[in-house]
Picture 1 (cartoon, rainbow, N blue to C red):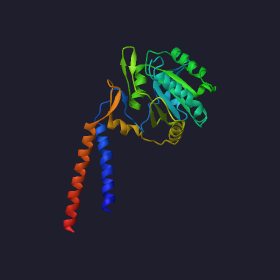
Picture 2 (cartoon, helix red, strand yellow):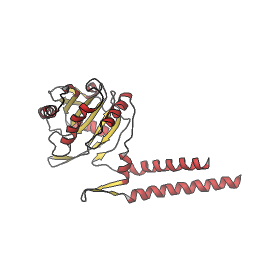
Picture 3 (cartoon, rainbow, N blue to C red):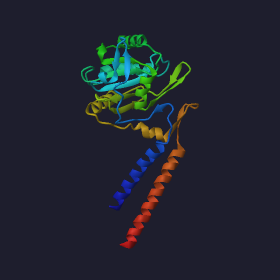
Length: 256
């Protein structure tokens, strides 16, 4: 019984310390997961055909949401190409079972640009898919930030380009944020499970969030290094908890 209580204490201290220390970070560029939160359904955008649409009117089925900018020279193109590939690889039916929505973070991009890039990605697909399965959107900065802030998706304009994370989000038909899939390459099975979670309104945390806590990216050296300061703080926090637990346990034994 004592061993079981000790294990529970250790796990609770570990998880709570990660949450406490991680929450102190100020994210300028990156993702702060908002699992269980809802997107602003009244956010207004223009689709690639030039029609004004509300986000809430589009979210009628489980959705893979991506935030990019169409004329991005970096990771946006590979991420969108991957989504085009995923469209035919997931063991679900596009349009009927799920859809993809892509929003440009660049408020200066027009629906004509969105239309051109949508055509490019559909023309490049080996298996022709229904174009209604993938919606390309543009919007003003107010509506873009309403959505990206709700997602915890933070980006920064640098010159003519943007620094931003790479990820897709699984959204429920009611606009609930269900899953984050980080990177620009995705396993079709993981995507399928994310969409099924979104359909049922479930949320599922990203394992990479803990890895991100433990490691820091060095942009100069282009590598990840162990974040000793954070981990040391966690160890001190846990050690203190174990010490206090031992003191309380010892007092109980003396009383008995």
